[in-house]
Amino acid sequence: MSKEHIKGLSIISSLLMIMGLFLMFFSVSIGTYLGDSWVSNQPGVYDNDDSLYTLIIETYINNLVIVGSILFSVGLLAGVFTYIKSFLSGTKGTTMSSNNND
Image (tube, rainbow, N blue to C red; front, side, top):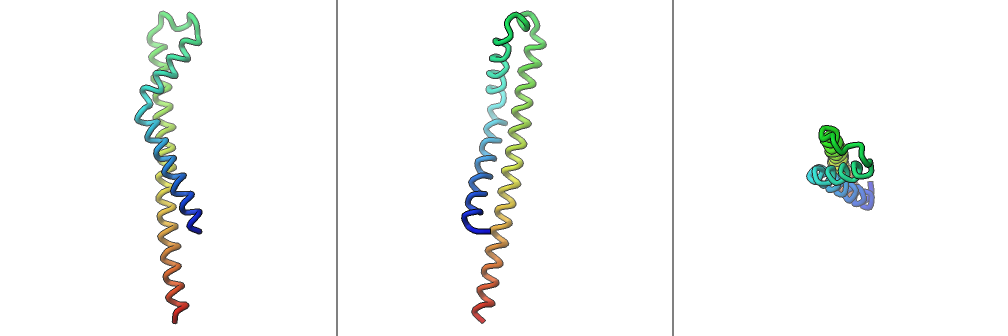
């Protein structure tokens, strides 16, 4: 694996982890905003029923936490994979160069 591939995978894994953490930590405010905007686009349906309003907001929040967790996990696995591949490719390169010097 070349250094460019390792650098690209490191950047992608970092971005995925940051996006996942952002979605997990700000899921309440984003979910409330999305739920409010969805309810406001449904005129007269949810005016008197607070339980449905609460259910919609909780559903948005849970969905954002799940998506954030998935993104963070994929980023973490990609980071671990990148670290292992860079470590193994670095070890192979030093072993091969010592054999070539003999």
